Length: 287
Image 1 (spheres, rainbow, N blue to C red):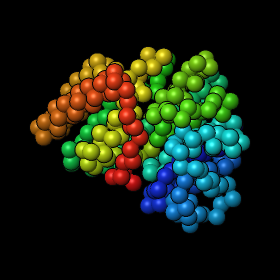
Image 2: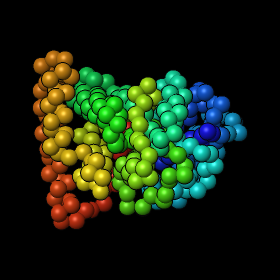
Image 3: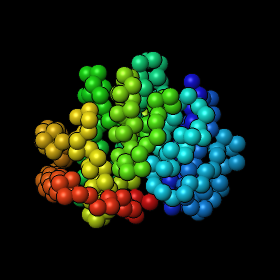
């Protein structure tokens, strides 16, 4: 099966080059096209400087949010498999080959790669990012090994194009929405931990809450009951908390993380109860 790689980006001229270069270094035998979708000329110009490869297509969207950008890419993509990633992350060596290998099972409809924090672990928020990505890895791996539904990561995911429908404009967690499309079609979601994607996470508390707030809102409850509930998060966090901290400082940072997540879930509860405000706010420190 051939592949359309879709890189959604917005005002990220400093990071799009690395994102595109690491994709171009992957095995290209199955890549039919690489689509860079962005609303701003600076990002598209930076992508153009990286390569003249004819497989790379630059597409300007109307700046109406990520769901609209993805929908535009879905309309233009011509391959059987869509690989979705972002303009502010970068792939590990052979990540694309490893990701696509799980489609050897014809019952698999969507595959998640493994996000890895590119931040230093020696700061409060850096440690938080390492802890949360490890927790997500353990959860996906456990569900995959048990044959259960799992959430695909929007940082790197592959999905059969025939399963993709238009994403509603109000969607905040597009990766969860696509995961549900796979399950509703009666196909499996799978996890490939070898398919590493490196992510820069927020370095300020304000940006951390912006990022987590917009994703947690859609994860509160789904019709598949597959979202991250506060109770599940506490149980999984306590299990990992016994082994992840490497010193007293990290143990104290972990306690602060549990407090921050509690504040986040309480905020989401009241937003759902009294009506949400605009939750899509740009996170500058990851760019």
